[in-house]
Image 1 (cartoon, rainbow, N blue to C red):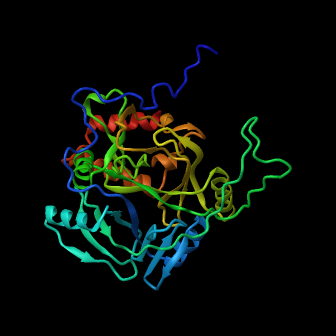
Image 2 (cartoon, helix red, strand yellow):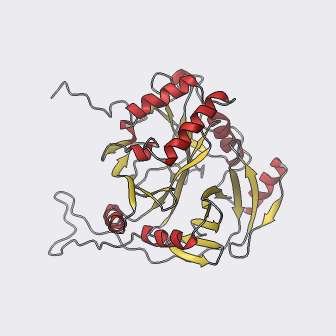
Length: 377
Protein backbone atom coordinates (compact mmCIF):
# COMPACT_ATOMS: atom_id res chain seq x y z
CA UNK A 1 0.00 0.00 0.00
CA UNK A 2 2.86 2.37 0.79
CA UNK A 3 4.13 2.04 -2.80
CA UNK A 4 0.82 3.08 -4.40
CA UNK A 5 1.00 6.40 -6.28
CA UNK A 6 -1.46 9.13 -5.32
CA UNK A 7 -2.58 10.60 -8.69
CA UNK A 8 -3.33 13.93 -7.01
CA UNK A 9 0.19 14.49 -5.73
CA UNK A 10 1.49 17.82 -7.01
CA UNK A 11 -1.80 18.79 -8.65
CA UNK A 12 -3.22 21.19 -6.08
CA UNK A 13 -1.53 24.36 -7.39
CA UNK A 14 0.28 25.18 -4.17
CA UNK A 15 3.32 25.92 -6.35
CA UNK A 16 3.83 29.61 -6.97
CA UNK A 17 5.19 31.25 -10.07
CA UNK A 18 8.85 31.13 -10.93
CA UNK A 19 10.99 34.11 -11.83
CA UNK A 20 9.99 35.51 -15.21
CA UNK A 21 6.62 33.74 -15.38
CA UNK A 22 3.34 35.51 -15.97
CA UNK A 23 2.32 37.57 -12.88
CA UNK A 24 -1.38 36.89 -13.36
CA UNK A 25 -2.53 40.52 -13.25
CA UNK A 26 -2.06 43.81 -15.05
CA UNK A 27 -0.20 46.65 -13.37
CA UNK A 28 -2.65 49.35 -14.41
CA UNK A 29 -5.91 47.96 -15.86
CA UNK A 30 -8.40 50.32 -17.48
CA UNK A 31 -11.21 49.25 -15.10
CA UNK A 32 -11.93 46.45 -12.63
CA UNK A 33 -15.25 44.78 -13.37
CA UNK A 34 -17.32 43.63 -10.41
CA UNK A 35 -18.84 40.39 -11.70
CA UNK A 36 -20.37 38.55 -14.62
CA UNK A 37 -23.78 40.02 -15.44
CA UNK A 38 -25.18 37.49 -17.95
CA UNK A 39 -24.41 35.31 -20.97
CA UNK A 40 -26.05 35.69 -24.39
CA UNK A 41 -26.96 32.88 -26.80
CA UNK A 42 -28.90 32.36 -30.01
CA UNK A 43 -31.02 29.20 -30.45
CA UNK A 44 -33.49 28.10 -33.11
CA UNK A 45 -36.14 26.66 -30.73
CA UNK A 46 -36.91 28.91 -27.75
CA UNK A 47 -39.68 26.62 -26.54
CA UNK A 48 -37.33 23.65 -26.26
CA UNK A 49 -34.70 25.86 -24.61
CA UNK A 50 -37.21 27.04 -22.01
CA UNK A 51 -38.35 23.52 -21.13
CA UNK A 52 -34.76 22.48 -20.42
CA UNK A 53 -34.07 25.74 -18.56
CA UNK A 54 -36.92 25.06 -16.13
CA UNK A 55 -35.76 21.48 -15.59
CA UNK A 56 -32.22 22.79 -14.99
CA UNK A 57 -33.46 25.27 -12.36
CA UNK A 58 -33.98 28.67 -14.03
CA UNK A 59 -37.04 30.91 -13.81
CA UNK A 60 -38.35 32.74 -16.87
CA UNK A 61 -38.33 36.54 -16.58
CA UNK A 62 -39.26 37.41 -20.16
CA UNK A 63 -40.67 35.29 -22.98
CA UNK A 64 -41.54 36.68 -26.41
CA UNK A 65 -41.61 35.14 -29.88
CA UNK A 66 -37.95 36.07 -30.34
CA UNK A 67 -36.40 36.33 -26.87
CA UNK A 68 -36.08 34.44 -23.59
CA UNK A 69 -34.60 35.81 -20.34
CA UNK A 70 -33.74 33.36 -17.54
CA UNK A 71 -32.86 34.19 -13.94
CA UNK A 72 -31.74 32.60 -10.68
CA UNK A 73 -33.05 33.33 -7.19
CA UNK A 74 -30.42 35.96 -6.34
CA UNK A 75 -31.27 39.62 -6.90
CA UNK A 76 -29.80 41.24 -10.01
CA UNK A 77 -30.17 40.94 -13.79
CA UNK A 78 -31.10 37.71 -15.61
CA UNK A 79 -28.38 35.04 -15.83
CA UNK A 80 -28.98 34.05 -19.45
CA UNK A 81 -30.44 35.86 -22.48
CA UNK A 82 -31.48 33.69 -25.45
CA UNK A 83 -32.60 35.14 -28.77
CA UNK A 84 -34.03 33.27 -31.70
CA UNK A 85 -31.58 32.42 -34.47
CA UNK A 86 -31.17 30.11 -37.44
CA UNK A 87 -28.57 28.04 -35.55
CA UNK A 88 -27.28 27.62 -32.02
CA UNK A 89 -24.59 30.15 -31.17
CA UNK A 90 -22.85 31.61 -28.13
CA UNK A 91 -22.81 35.39 -28.58
CA UNK A 92 -20.68 36.44 -25.61
CA UNK A 93 -20.51 37.43 -21.94
CA UNK A 94 -21.61 40.63 -20.24
CA UNK A 95 -19.66 41.88 -17.20
CA UNK A 96 -21.05 44.23 -14.58
CA UNK A 97 -18.99 47.38 -14.06
CA UNK A 98 -18.25 48.56 -10.53
CA UNK A 99 -20.04 51.85 -11.40
CA UNK A 100 -21.23 53.88 -14.37
CA UNK A 101 -18.02 55.92 -14.54
CA UNK A 102 -16.08 52.75 -15.40
CA UNK A 103 -18.22 52.18 -18.50
CA UNK A 104 -17.38 55.70 -19.68
CA UNK A 105 -13.70 55.21 -18.86
CA UNK A 106 -13.57 51.93 -20.76
CA UNK A 107 -15.39 53.39 -23.76
CA UNK A 108 -12.99 56.32 -23.88
CA UNK A 109 -9.90 54.08 -23.62
CA UNK A 110 -11.10 51.77 -26.40
CA UNK A 111 -12.70 54.49 -28.56
CA UNK A 112 -16.07 52.78 -28.42
CA UNK A 113 -19.52 54.25 -27.82
CA UNK A 114 -21.72 53.83 -24.77
CA UNK A 115 -25.18 52.70 -25.85
CA UNK A 116 -28.47 52.14 -24.06
CA UNK A 117 -29.59 48.58 -23.43
CA UNK A 118 -33.19 47.55 -24.18
CA UNK A 119 -35.75 48.71 -21.61
CA UNK A 120 -36.26 45.08 -20.56
CA UNK A 121 -32.72 45.18 -19.12
CA UNK A 122 -32.20 48.88 -18.47
CA UNK A 123 -28.86 50.61 -18.14
CA UNK A 124 -26.04 51.07 -20.63
CA UNK A 125 -23.27 49.04 -22.24
CA UNK A 126 -19.96 49.43 -24.01
CA UNK A 127 -19.51 46.58 -26.48
CA UNK A 128 -15.98 45.32 -27.14
CA UNK A 129 -14.42 42.37 -28.96
CA UNK A 130 -11.64 40.31 -27.41
CA UNK A 131 -8.72 39.08 -29.59
CA UNK A 132 -10.56 35.80 -30.23
CA UNK A 133 -13.52 37.67 -31.71
CA UNK A 134 -15.99 37.17 -28.86
CA UNK A 135 -18.26 40.12 -28.13
CA UNK A 136 -17.75 41.32 -24.58
CA UNK A 137 -20.22 43.71 -22.97
CA UNK A 138 -19.51 45.80 -19.88
CA UNK A 139 -22.78 47.08 -18.43
CA UNK A 140 -24.02 49.27 -15.59
CA UNK A 141 -27.25 50.63 -14.12
CA UNK A 142 -29.27 47.62 -15.26
CA UNK A 143 -32.59 46.76 -13.63
CA UNK A 144 -32.27 44.80 -10.38
CA UNK A 145 -34.70 41.89 -10.19
CA UNK A 146 -35.85 41.21 -6.61
CA UNK A 147 -34.64 38.14 -4.75
CA UNK A 148 -36.73 34.97 -5.10
CA UNK A 149 -37.19 32.34 -2.38
CA UNK A 150 -34.36 29.80 -2.31
CA UNK A 151 -34.52 26.56 -0.33
CA UNK A 152 -32.61 26.41 2.93
CA UNK A 153 -29.89 23.72 2.85
CA UNK A 154 -30.76 20.61 4.83
CA UNK A 155 -29.24 20.38 8.33
CA UNK A 156 -26.47 17.78 8.30
CA UNK A 157 -25.03 15.55 10.98
CA UNK A 158 -21.23 15.72 10.76
CA UNK A 159 -19.66 12.83 12.69
CA UNK A 160 -20.44 13.50 16.35
CA UNK A 161 -21.90 16.96 15.62
CA UNK A 162 -25.62 16.25 15.43
CA UNK A 163 -27.79 19.06 14.09
CA UNK A 164 -30.72 16.74 13.30
CA UNK A 165 -32.36 14.39 15.83
CA UNK A 166 -35.70 12.56 15.51
CA UNK A 167 -36.10 14.05 12.01
CA UNK A 168 -35.56 12.21 8.73
CA UNK A 169 -33.76 13.56 5.68
CA UNK A 170 -35.82 13.41 2.46
CA UNK A 171 -34.60 15.77 -0.30
CA UNK A 172 -37.29 16.08 -2.97
CA UNK A 173 -36.51 14.96 -6.51
CA UNK A 174 -37.36 18.21 -8.29
CA UNK A 175 -35.58 20.90 -10.31
CA UNK A 176 -32.80 22.48 -8.28
CA UNK A 177 -33.09 26.23 -7.77
CA UNK A 178 -30.28 27.99 -9.63
CA UNK A 179 -29.11 30.89 -7.49
CA UNK A 180 -26.80 32.78 -9.84
CA UNK A 181 -24.40 32.67 -12.77
CA UNK A 182 -20.92 31.71 -11.58
CA UNK A 183 -18.51 31.53 -14.51
CA UNK A 184 -17.97 30.88 -18.19
CA UNK A 185 -15.14 28.91 -19.83
CA UNK A 186 -13.88 29.88 -23.29
CA UNK A 187 -11.39 28.20 -25.63
CA UNK A 188 -9.12 30.35 -27.78
CA UNK A 189 -6.36 29.89 -30.34
CA UNK A 190 -4.76 33.10 -29.01
CA UNK A 191 -4.65 32.21 -25.34
CA UNK A 192 -1.94 34.54 -24.04
CA UNK A 193 -3.05 37.53 -26.11
CA UNK A 194 -6.68 37.06 -25.08
CA UNK A 195 -5.82 36.51 -21.41
CA UNK A 196 -3.77 39.71 -21.32
CA UNK A 197 -6.63 41.60 -22.98
CA UNK A 198 -9.01 40.65 -20.15
CA UNK A 199 -6.44 41.50 -17.48
CA UNK A 200 -5.57 44.85 -19.10
CA UNK A 201 -9.07 45.99 -19.97
CA UNK A 202 -11.30 44.46 -17.27
CA UNK A 203 -8.86 44.18 -14.36
CA UNK A 204 -9.37 40.44 -13.86
CA UNK A 205 -6.68 38.54 -11.94
CA UNK A 206 -5.51 34.93 -12.25
CA UNK A 207 -6.22 32.43 -9.47
CA UNK A 208 -4.58 29.39 -11.11
CA UNK A 209 -2.48 28.64 -14.18
CA UNK A 210 -2.24 25.21 -15.80
CA UNK A 211 0.52 24.16 -18.19
CA UNK A 212 1.00 21.07 -20.32
CA UNK A 213 3.11 18.41 -18.58
CA UNK A 214 6.75 18.91 -19.50
CA UNK A 215 6.04 22.26 -21.16
CA UNK A 216 6.03 24.71 -18.25
CA UNK A 217 8.89 26.65 -19.83
CA UNK A 218 6.55 27.48 -22.75
CA UNK A 219 4.07 29.09 -20.38
CA UNK A 220 0.51 28.31 -19.29
CA UNK A 221 -2.27 27.02 -21.53
CA UNK A 222 -5.19 27.59 -19.15
CA UNK A 223 -6.08 30.15 -16.54
CA UNK A 224 -8.84 30.50 -13.96
CA UNK A 225 -9.52 34.21 -13.60
CA UNK A 226 -11.47 36.12 -10.94
CA UNK A 227 -12.72 39.65 -10.39
CA UNK A 228 -10.51 41.97 -8.36
CA UNK A 229 -12.74 43.40 -5.62
CA UNK A 230 -9.88 44.30 -3.30
CA UNK A 231 -10.45 42.89 0.18
CA UNK A 232 -13.94 41.61 -0.75
CA UNK A 233 -13.68 37.93 -1.75
CA UNK A 234 -14.90 36.84 -5.18
CA UNK A 235 -15.33 33.48 -6.91
CA UNK A 236 -12.12 31.56 -7.62
CA UNK A 237 -12.97 32.06 -11.29
CA UNK A 238 -15.50 34.19 -13.10
CA UNK A 239 -13.85 33.43 -16.43
CA UNK A 240 -11.63 30.50 -17.40
CA UNK A 241 -9.65 30.44 -20.63
CA UNK A 242 -7.94 27.52 -22.33
CA UNK A 243 -5.74 27.24 -25.41
CA UNK A 244 -7.25 25.09 -28.16
CA UNK A 245 -7.64 24.65 -31.89
CA UNK A 246 -10.83 26.76 -32.16
CA UNK A 247 -12.37 29.86 -30.61
CA UNK A 248 -15.48 28.58 -28.86
CA UNK A 249 -17.67 28.37 -25.78
CA UNK A 250 -16.78 25.43 -23.52
CA UNK A 251 -19.27 25.62 -20.65
CA UNK A 252 -20.96 27.92 -18.16
CA UNK A 253 -21.65 27.28 -14.47
CA UNK A 254 -24.53 28.16 -12.15
CA UNK A 255 -24.53 28.04 -8.35
CA UNK A 256 -27.07 25.91 -6.48
CA UNK A 257 -27.65 25.75 -2.70
CA UNK A 258 -25.93 22.50 -1.70
CA UNK A 259 -24.94 18.96 -2.62
CA UNK A 260 -28.38 17.50 -1.83
CA UNK A 261 -30.20 19.86 -4.17
CA UNK A 262 -27.51 19.41 -6.84
CA UNK A 263 -27.83 15.62 -6.71
CA UNK A 264 -31.63 15.53 -6.49
CA UNK A 265 -31.90 18.08 -9.30
CA UNK A 266 -29.55 15.95 -11.38
CA UNK A 267 -31.74 12.91 -10.85
CA UNK A 268 -34.72 14.98 -11.99
CA UNK A 269 -32.86 15.81 -15.23
CA UNK A 270 -31.92 12.15 -15.76
CA UNK A 271 -35.54 11.10 -15.26
CA UNK A 272 -36.50 13.41 -18.13
CA UNK A 273 -33.93 12.02 -20.52
CA UNK A 274 -31.32 14.78 -20.43
CA UNK A 275 -27.63 13.91 -20.86
CA UNK A 276 -25.18 14.15 -17.98
CA UNK A 277 -21.78 15.06 -19.38
CA UNK A 278 -19.74 14.44 -16.22
CA UNK A 279 -20.31 14.29 -12.47
CA UNK A 280 -20.91 14.35 -9.61
CA UNK A 281 -17.46 15.26 -8.26
CA UNK A 282 -15.32 17.93 -6.63
CA UNK A 283 -12.87 20.03 -8.62
CA UNK A 284 -9.31 20.85 -7.62
CA UNK A 285 -8.93 24.38 -9.02
CA UNK A 286 -11.88 26.17 -7.40
CA UNK A 287 -12.92 23.22 -5.19
CA UNK A 288 -16.51 23.28 -6.48
CA UNK A 289 -18.80 20.27 -6.21
CA UNK A 290 -19.84 19.91 -9.85
CA UNK A 291 -22.35 18.24 -12.15
CA UNK A 292 -22.18 18.86 -15.93
CA UNK A 293 -25.05 18.54 -18.41
CA UNK A 294 -25.73 19.01 -22.14
CA UNK A 295 -28.75 21.08 -23.10
CA UNK A 296 -30.80 20.07 -26.18
CA UNK A 297 -28.67 22.39 -28.37
CA UNK A 298 -25.41 20.75 -27.26
CA UNK A 299 -24.20 23.50 -24.92
CA UNK A 300 -22.52 22.25 -21.75
CA UNK A 301 -23.83 23.73 -18.49
CA UNK A 302 -22.79 23.06 -14.90
CA UNK A 303 -24.46 23.01 -11.52
CA UNK A 304 -21.96 23.83 -8.77
CA UNK A 305 -21.86 24.41 -5.03
CA UNK A 306 -19.25 25.15 -2.35
CA UNK A 307 -16.68 26.98 -4.48
CA UNK A 308 -13.56 28.80 -3.28
CA UNK A 309 -13.60 32.56 -2.65
CA UNK A 310 -10.38 34.63 -2.85
CA UNK A 311 -9.63 38.28 -2.17
CA UNK A 312 -6.94 40.11 -4.16
CA UNK A 313 -4.04 39.03 -1.89
CA UNK A 314 -3.93 35.44 -3.21
CA UNK A 315 -1.26 34.91 -5.88
CA UNK A 316 -1.70 32.49 -8.80
CA UNK A 317 -1.02 28.80 -8.35
CA UNK A 318 0.69 26.70 -11.03
CA UNK A 319 0.01 23.06 -11.87
CA UNK A 320 0.29 20.63 -14.80
CA UNK A 321 -2.90 20.02 -16.78
CA UNK A 322 -4.06 16.39 -16.68
CA UNK A 323 -7.45 14.74 -17.03
CA UNK A 324 -7.00 13.01 -13.66
CA UNK A 325 -6.15 16.39 -12.11
CA UNK A 326 -9.56 17.88 -12.92
CA UNK A 327 -11.21 16.43 -9.80
CA UNK A 328 -10.35 15.50 -6.22
CA UNK A 329 -13.05 12.82 -6.25
CA UNK A 330 -15.74 11.63 -8.61
CA UNK A 331 -15.90 9.50 -11.74
CA UNK A 332 -13.14 9.86 -14.34
CA UNK A 333 -13.56 12.78 -16.75
CA UNK A 334 -15.72 11.58 -19.63
CA UNK A 335 -14.89 11.73 -23.33
CA UNK A 336 -17.88 14.04 -23.74
CA UNK A 337 -16.50 16.49 -21.17
CA UNK A 338 -13.02 16.35 -22.74
CA UNK A 339 -14.47 16.95 -26.21
CA UNK A 340 -13.24 13.66 -27.69
CA UNK A 341 -16.51 11.70 -27.74
CA UNK A 342 -17.23 10.59 -31.32
CA UNK A 343 -19.83 12.88 -32.83
CA UNK A 344 -20.39 16.21 -34.54
CA UNK A 345 -18.54 18.21 -31.91
CA UNK A 346 -15.40 16.06 -32.04
CA UNK A 347 -15.46 16.19 -35.86
CA UNK A 348 -15.68 20.00 -35.73
CA UNK A 349 -12.80 20.07 -33.27
CA UNK A 350 -10.69 17.81 -35.49
CA UNK A 351 -11.29 20.05 -38.49
CA UNK A 352 -10.45 23.09 -36.39
CA UNK A 353 -7.28 21.37 -35.19
CA UNK A 354 -6.06 20.82 -38.74
CA UNK A 355 -6.82 24.44 -39.63
CA UNK A 356 -5.17 25.76 -36.46
CA UNK A 357 -1.90 23.96 -37.19
CA UNK A 358 -1.73 25.76 -40.55
CA UNK A 359 -2.68 29.18 -39.17
CA UNK A 360 -0.73 31.88 -37.34
CA UNK A 361 -1.72 31.35 -33.70
CA UNK A 362 -0.46 29.87 -30.43
CA UNK A 363 -1.65 26.32 -31.15
CA UNK A 364 1.30 24.54 -32.78
CA UNK A 365 2.50 20.93 -33.08
CA UNK A 366 4.18 20.95 -29.66
CA UNK A 367 0.97 22.24 -28.07
CA UNK A 368 -0.98 19.52 -29.90
CA UNK A 369 1.31 16.87 -28.41
CA UNK A 370 0.72 18.38 -24.98
CA UNK A 371 -3.05 18.33 -25.49
CA UNK A 372 -2.98 14.69 -26.58
CA UNK A 373 -1.02 13.82 -23.44
CA UNK A 374 -3.71 15.52 -21.34
CA UNK A 375 -6.51 13.59 -23.07
CA UNK A 376 -4.63 10.32 -22.48
CA UNK A 377 -4.01 11.05 -18.81
